Amino acid sequence: MHLFGIETEYGITREDLDAVDPVEESMELVRAHLPGKFERRWDYRGEDPHEDARGFRVSGLQQDKEEDDFAKVDAHRPFSFHEMKSDLVLPNGARFYNDHTHPEYSTPECRTLKDVLAHDRAGERIVQRAADRRNQQLGGAHVQLYKNNTDFHGHSYGCHDNYLVSRSLPFPQLVSGLLPFLVSRQLVAGAGKVGMEAQESGYVPGPFQLSQRADFMEAELGVDTMHNRPILNTRDEPHADRTKYRRLHLILGDANMCEYATALKVGTTRLVLDMLQRGAAPSLELEQPVAAIKQLSRDPDLKTTVRLKDGRTISGLAIQEEYWHAVSRCCAGSDPDADWVLREWQETLGVLRQDRTQLVGKIDWVTKQWLLETFVREERLAWEDPWLASLDLEYHNVNPDRGLYLGLEAEGKTWRMTSERDIAQALVAGPSDTRGGLRGLCVRRFPEQITGMQWERVQFAGGLRARTLEMGDLFEPDAVQACAAVLEAAASPADALAAWTRRKDG
Image (cartoon, rainbow, N blue to C red; front, side, top):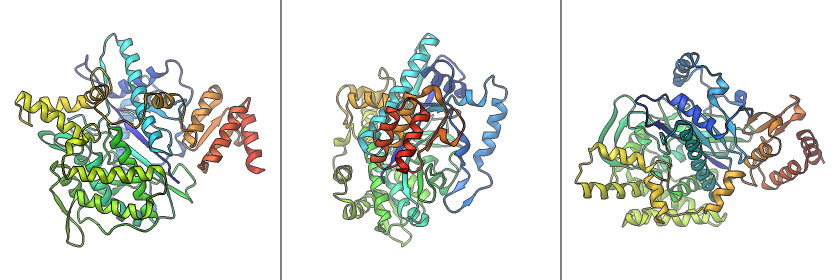
């Protein structure tokens, strides 16, 4: 079962203000997407971030205190909880809301790499259109949005990739098999960053590194996401039948501008999970994963080696090559996406050993390093110059008039899997073969009757069980498309749910 999606928290600022309230600015940005009263409220009752995949429930999270502190401040704001969140489920099945200090866009669940890329790019367009509307209200191009992971003041925000995983795979086996891959995944999926950073000490200008998030990784495993951030998040919130599935919620990844990097990030991770399900993991357990992820990030020459538990030392490239060999032995030929990933993954690792300039426009850290090195050379700057941090930030600006990456794309210097037609379609409808598409279809067909939304269910006016579309086990494409046909043909939610129940029972 291959389902995945991406949640992106965007950096937000107001260039006309000395002091910015990111909570209110994020709220106003989301509300600019759909002016008027917000009716499609997200139902938080099914979410519990305290459930841990290691088999227990934590009594409290470090971030709970911070949330309590936020709540005390928010109590003085003239907005209710739901007004603050400004939750929207969009006609394409995506979720767009205020994650307290950041606008967040979550793609609908996707089954193919092209779909997840199209919906990730649609998210960029949606948040920028909201910024354009907000700037019209403000009378100038004051609000700027960044698809990145740092404000260069010691704060990090996430880009989380999520995967549906069978619960039959024991969690300890998942951890031991996945950690070395995740630590080294930044070689193909890192967004690149000037300098080093930590929540305690803030930003320190300096040399270039591969990843924006690596500096903020503090633990191997954990359920927290804002403090003591883990390489592998253990939150056990499947949004599906928990007897059959778990959701792997990865918080270590960078937000990518390059489509190629996003495709490799998601595609390689999906194949590694398939390989682990088959019990074919390479023996590469790291002695100190948290130290290793930072060490590898801080060496763009890719020469650094890290120590394994068995005493061997190995480079990040060699770890990735070991995983490629293991995956190719068991997953080659399984589907077109798998074959594309295996081919491109192998080629990318080979190019990283030789002439990486061939990856400009494909891998973010290589592209950003090339841009910055050009600027350093032309302006005769040192890598500690604060100008470079500003350029680093502008690489991720999703305003096409300002974003350095989008400027390269406009010049035809980047690799594309999606077309403008693909993105336009993703703006208005979800994938036709996942429940994300069904969620969007409900928004398009019956917007006034929806009273609550979750990833796995849609609640309609009436409050009875018969008024809820349950999608906790609705994953097979044929079943999704059959349900979509029922929703399209029905005159009301009640008619749709009655017809769907008859079809399933029949």
